[in-house]
Image 1: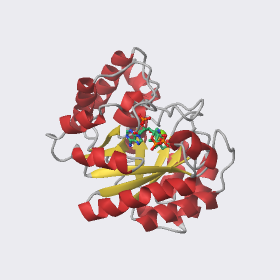
Image 2 (image 1 turned 45 degrees about the vertical axis):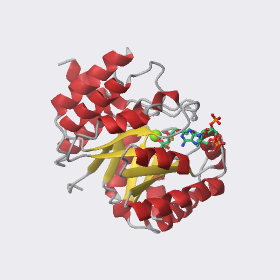
Image 3 (image 1 turned 180 degrees about the horizontal axis):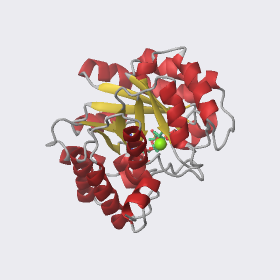
Image 4 (image 1 turned 90 degrees about the vertical axis):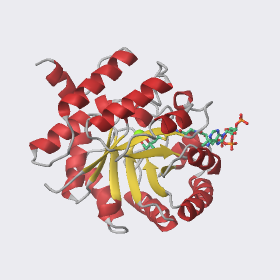
Length: 297
Ligand code: HMG
Ligand code: MG
């Protein structure tokens, strides 16, 4: 349990994609720079999706180019199809993420196609990425419940994870998009997926809507999962997941891990400062409990 955990920072993408207040390209770049300076060296910085669907992620090409000078960090971007891949590559992307869903209802709402159709869209992306030497991460949304279809069977998640793995994704990030999971369910789902592909190649992407994310992450760590997606300040949510709130807060994850003796390499003071700066920009306080506690000191 105390070996290295890798945190994939979601703030500039998942964190900002649902925000009402527009955040400028310049501020998004400053946000990424500050996260890397705080020790978060894997950051999802944008999404090459339809600007009509997610206006907040427009100009992700400028953000990706704008952080190109930062060394020793890995930047991820979402791509739903070849059009997105073309744009991401033109802006210099070296790691892209495709995103599927374990439920038909969410797949349709989020990316306007069935699960099977989404896989067909990803196939040329993965083939081209392989030829280009680009790493591809694969997300699965709604692994512990769907706002449209309700309960999701662990086997459905495991089968889809296997499909993405066979297509060549180096890591499968399992999304509790609406944060409804509880620890034993999370464990059951992770065991089902871990029975099909290496646990070392799984990531946990848990939204904290019901305040269960840390407990679910702990259950997943007990199963051997060592990659955690988190967003500074607990920012985030998906416009196609009614009622969903942000990712688990990076500060909360760092506090838990460091308290368990796991070295994260994250400078909490710098992270706190960054979170507070973004909160000022957005005009509301961060939801992170750790940030509230440290701010009150
Ligand atoms: P579609 O309507 O099926 O696609 O959308 P289309 O090929 O028919 O094109 C429709 C329009 O979109 C056209 O423009 C295309 O050019 C444009 P128009 O002619 O109407 O002006 N288009 C694009 N523009 C920019 N970049 C592209 C692109 N592709 C088509 N790549 C599509 C399909 C996926 C594009 C659309 O539904 C979309 O962009 N959806 C947004 C999905 C999204 O970003 N969701 C949030 C992120 S996922 C998430 O948050 C979950 C996650 O965090 C894990 C978890 O928590 O579970 C990852
Ligand atoms: Mg998410």
